[in-house]
Image 1 (cartoon, one colour):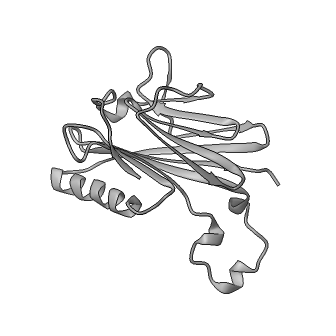
Image 2: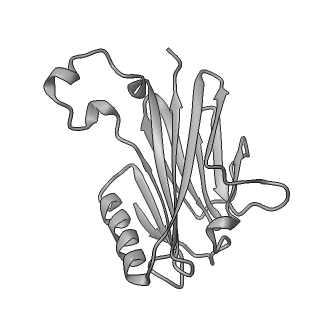
Image 3: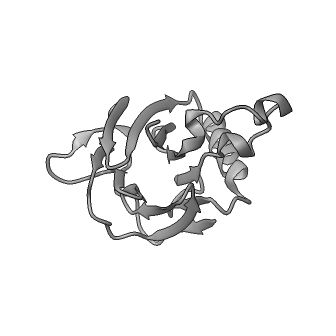
Length: 183
């Protein structure tokens, strides 16, 4: 689902993003609930970026007031019945053309997916925050011999990715999160 958000950017640079676990649902400009792996995963676009609520977990990557933690490169923790892993990287593109192509590629890849939410902020069609579930291994193109083997740990969990695009600095922050049931 792609939507135009009725709010200005609250986080205009990658280094303004913070990371928090366990926050209650914040006011959202758009929400997409998706069922997967026995969980409802709720993607929430905020004026200040995103929040994902998945089972016992609430992940917020946004421009948060106060003493919020800066966005880490990696984080992990245990939540009831699950192990949570998070990773983030920032790419700074060399010119506007490369930046625009990269953002358009992400938006095109997610355009027809019912498990993805993309929000366009006013002022630039490349000011975008996008969230999408990762496909489980069983749904990916897997050679037949592997499809009959014991499921991988990845199949006993759920994952999602996000993209936060900042046209003014030509930065794209990419995150990958996973909730895995311990074996």
